[in-house]
Image (cartoon, rainbow, N blue to C red; front, side, top):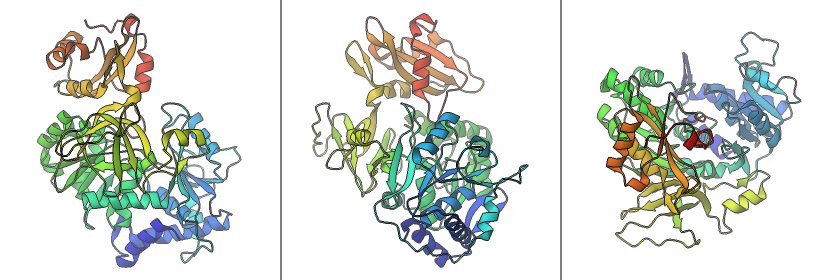
Length: 516
């Protein structure tokens, strides 16, 4: 038995002809989607895939990815989503480290693995019909296929790798119970109806995109797939398909806001709610979005290790600027100080800042073949250390008040949270994106560096940015160094790669970025 497969099957039985997936000109109803899943599960079983075998998926956002995902679960095997934006050596590492027995992919990505001892099936063959066809394999399968062996409960069913921004990617072991509990908690918080249409431009190989997609498909919602982050394409599809739910990341919402100012809010009239995650949503961007279109933007927070949602603002209450809302009903959250003591929040008062820790049925089983890393991250009584700093307000809403503990800037012995400075920079009318970090300083230990990307057609002098910060922040928190970029390096979800920017500017004092 597969919990997610069975949840999908309930929707198929209830409304087989309802529109399930939109991808370009393709329109699949729930029955069509379900038949292809069963056929592929049978075909994979015929090719030797057994319970607990790992099968890699390497796709952009397309329907074949979802067919493969549910077919693998149907067999009791393990899905290994491959981040297609990783460097080639990291993609190869993920496949090798996971021990994948087979890969499902497309013509575009097949060359990465040709000549290697890994069988693969290829969708969208294009100019190379000699490759084994995923479509043909699906057609060869039996739609009434029933696996003989039921997978054990609370065992790994998805092996999702982190982006590897602090080293080699780590495999996060997730069970179906982890994922299903998170879809339920997320659904209870947002209370989407069955008639919604969700636009999915978030990558399906990322936990945020996956959990919204699983929620949609297990609740009978229509899902419109977009292959990548293209603000103009996203806006046009919202209008064309009358999308009601739009999940994105802040960097893409920023570009959407700029485009909306040109196109007019009317193109977003069908939207009921937008969900922001993957990085902190600057309050100034939230205000800009709300002004650009009359819509509700709800910010949430989570990690791959928590399947991923920990907290989210509630649709019934609307957005709270700067807050990621209340913890999900089935997730506990606590704050811990530097001494490891739990911070007790007094009733009716804001809490002090501490490390956010989470506990619940959504917390991962552990890191794949990394017992020491698992022990460092999970306490013996099941609390996951997020490494993020936050605090609660008097109503219990969670705020990511300091960003990552490891990102704190230690200037002259004082801890400085980059997030506060970034949010200040976002208030400048010329700034599209901001990233603040510490760079070495012989006297202070670290000093503050601000990298920014300007809005299209805008220009600004570094001295002007310096003056702007002095007017908004205490002198101690003002960046000493500034640099303007055409664009930032980002990962697959649009999150700015702060580590790369920091490494590139570690010799800031000698490269002419000083605006003082």
